[in-house]
Amino acid sequence: MEKETVVISKGYDPLKYNGAVKPPLFLTSTYKFKSAEEGESFIRVALGLDKGEKGFVYSRFSNPNFDIVEERLSLLEGAEAAAIFGSGMAAITSTLLAFVKHGDYIFYTNPVYGGTEFLFKEFFEKMGVSTMHVKAGSDTPNLIEAKINSFKEKIKGKSVILYVETPANPNNVMIDIEAIVKIRDKLREEGLSAKVIVDNTFMGPVFQSPFEQKVDIVLYSATKFIGGHSDIIAGATLGSKEDIYKVKGIRGMIGTNGNPFDAWLMARSLETVHIRMQRQMENATKVAEFLSKHPKVERVIYPELYDKNSEQYKIYKKQCKGPGSLLSFYVKGGKKEAFKFLNNVKLCKLAVSLGGTESLIEHPKAMTHSEVDEKSLRDAEITDNMIRLSVGIENHEDLINDLKSALDKI
Image (cartoon, rainbow, N blue to C red; front, side, top):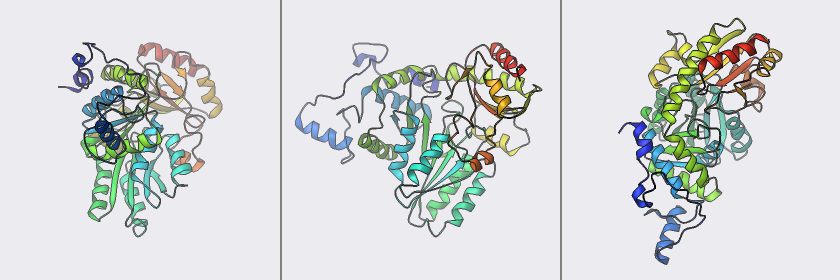
């Protein structure tokens, strides 16, 4: 089956639930065992003490609504298994806790989502994990390799995470996933424990599939395109059965699981993810073309507008199936002009987040990336006049008219 069909037909059998065509909502905290022996076995499996038949124990560990979404996400991404969480940050934190400890190393690309950067510096660094970034772009693999080589003696016997967000948030810079995987393979040949983790929130699950490049883990803020309606907070981690078994062990231990209602909403939203993202992409392409020609816009960063002879365009065409619906642009002027523009948009919602059915517009430096240090902001070209726009499913002409009207106010 094609993926559009899988997300509607798999993961749920109506005949097991009185013929209900759509999954019911399982609002229960605990589950009855058939016997004491079954209870003992299910709990030991849930806690990661044994491997065996999984069963429902307590909704911090699993829930039928979780299972439906996790199976559909796995099939959609081509992963062996998935785990959902109460937020994207919960997914990132739980996943890294499953694979790093004091003394280990995380090499990541800059920029990443501001919350991720904050987590690395304010949590994992204090935990004794070394976190170091390199500039996102066409040269990222070389920069990461050089950084790793400078720590060659120190990383012996340690775990190494290569953490990539591509396209980067908010400057839409592409990183060659295949080249990062080759670095991991080289580290493994040298006897090191290494994994590639990709945050696929911007393009996935429709326009980019990092498992095709043999990454280990894919992460999502499922709040965004997977949820797609700006009405839930959720996260997801996908990978091998062995890796997700470890991640779920952490999830159950520290309680970063989601809740049944949000999982139910995710299952609903996955059925339309292809339709929504396709419409959003079509709109974004038209909006980007308009902005690129407007006299009060310095430049627009959107994959379809990359220089066709550039390395960035080659990476984009190699690993993406479409340009997505996120774009960033720079108005002429500075913070004053950017804020003037933002205060005059009417149809686009002035709000953080992305991937909803409505268009969302924000100021990265003052909002989503406000906790990022000045040097990292400069390296990522996150400036006072940068605007990020997540294009929704509205009529594209209405969106263009809204943006034009606000630009005219500068």
